[in-house]
Amino acid sequence: MHKKALVCLSGGVDSTAALLRCYQEFSSVRAVFVKTAGMNPPAQAYESCRMLGIELIVADAKDLFNREILELTEKIYSLGETPNPCALCNAKVKLAVPYTMLEDQESLVTGHYANYSEGLLRRGSDPSKDQSYFLSLLPRRVLERCYFPLANSIKTEVRNEVLARDLPFLTSESQDLCFSRNKAGEPGDIVDISGKIVGRHTGLDAYTTGQRKGLGAHSSRKFVVELDLERNRLVIGDEENLYSEFCLLNSINWLRKPEDSRFDSLIQIRYRKPAAKADITLLGDGLSAFVRFYDPQKAVAPGQVGAIFQNDFVLGGGIIGKYRGDNNA
Image 1 (tube, one colour):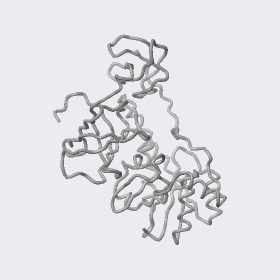
Image 2 (tube, helix red, strand yellow):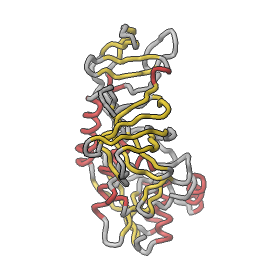
Image 3 (cartoon, helix red, strand yellow):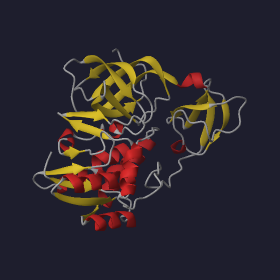
Image 4 (cartoon, helix red, strand yellow):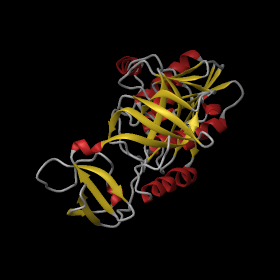
């Protein structure tokens, strides 16, 4: 571990706890707030830094955010897929910008519940808060400079630690996007799996695989099964229609690439969803893979992040693609 720390501070309890621990552990500490969607640092972030005597730097990354996240998000939606902007933002903006600011012997610190040690990105100790999934797209060169002080902590002790020091923090933990989308897409037909028209949708952008709400009234509980971009149709069906045995994984960011082109591993297809055992076959240059789940998985959504695990450490992460039955793996 380095002697100095640059802490990514959002004003939330986790990043505030990371700031406090670095204040106690490092000889030199700076804090940085990465400004993305035009929002300034919350008052809590300024006050915590003032109380600890730490400089708070505001890094304006709005243009980079617009180019790398907003435009990419719209592109993924235009393909009839559901993006994961938060994971993309970690890799391309939120940690990428502070990484360029690092001084010699300075660690890049965040409040993520994850662990990077001995060249491996591992799950955090608190299973209810583990965020290694969201870091699976982060380049290895960035991870090698990272330190995650909350790696072995649980949420309750982290919160109590900050409260005991009377440091202010944002009390709400928003799970929403930090930006809004104005594009609604073109309305079209809602069809069942047989192709029968059963309603109208407001634009495919508003739906994702596995969704139940916003589908209208039907004789039984229905779910989004597919976004048919070519015909601008929303395909709905029963819960049993949501399960997939296969998918593709594209644009893989390898943190530790397996030596064999075919191997067994665990795939996590959503945050909060347990990783599932799968047979993985690398394709072409190894940046894409064909995934065969041992047990069919529910609501495998193209555009989402798929993180590849071996036990509790991350081999890499990529973007889920739709399998169309044309692979010979």
